Every structure is written in structure tokens, then in C-alpha cells.
Image (cartoon, rainbow, N blue to C red; front, top):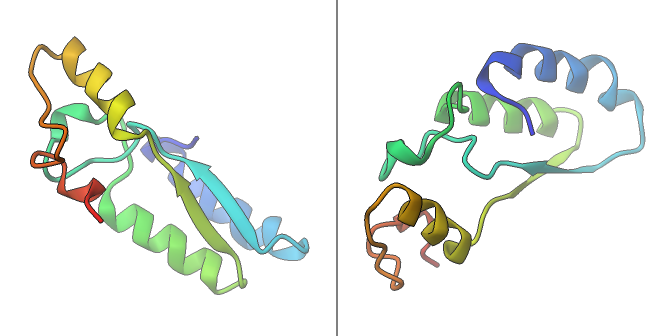
Amino acid sequence: MIAGNDFNSFITFINNDLSKTPVNQLFLRINYNYQFKSHPELAEKNALTEQQVKKMVKTAAQHNIEIIPIINSIGIAQFHCVLLHWQVDLNNKYFPEFQL
């Protein structure tokens, strides 16, 4: 998992190191390390911005590497929300990012 303050180092890693390997898929653990638009209070300190994620995906794609995000399921997000003292609609009404 990378944080927003590690972003430039990660881009450098993709360009200088990962690009020289046969890796074509990279599973990236996101969890709460993203600034969700619908619920910004879920984001960790120094969470990745949408622009950073887009640049990361574009940089990886230039080297034929697909970034596959790993995010918490709604059940785990519900637990986090309980810690924040508010309820979650299990129909994903409040989490449009997770709707299919």
C-alpha cells in the first residue's frame, strides 16, 4: 500500500524498476488509502487523490502493466463506518463507488 506522500517514489519505481521486469499485472492494496468523493471521512491521512491514481494507472499502462486495485468490501467498510458512529445502507446507497 502506498500513501500520497510516497506517490512520486512509486511512479519512479514503475518507470525505472518494474518496467524492466516481466510483470504485467500489479495488485495494489487501496483500502482506505483513497480520497473517496462520496465519503471523504473514510480516507486515511495522505490518501491518494483521483489525479494520483490516474497518473499511476497511465504510467503503468505505458509499460504494459495493469494495476488491479484491492479495496475493502462493503462489509469491512461497514465496520469502519460503525467506528465513525454512523450507519451504512447495505444497498450501497451511500457508497456509489461500490455499485455494479
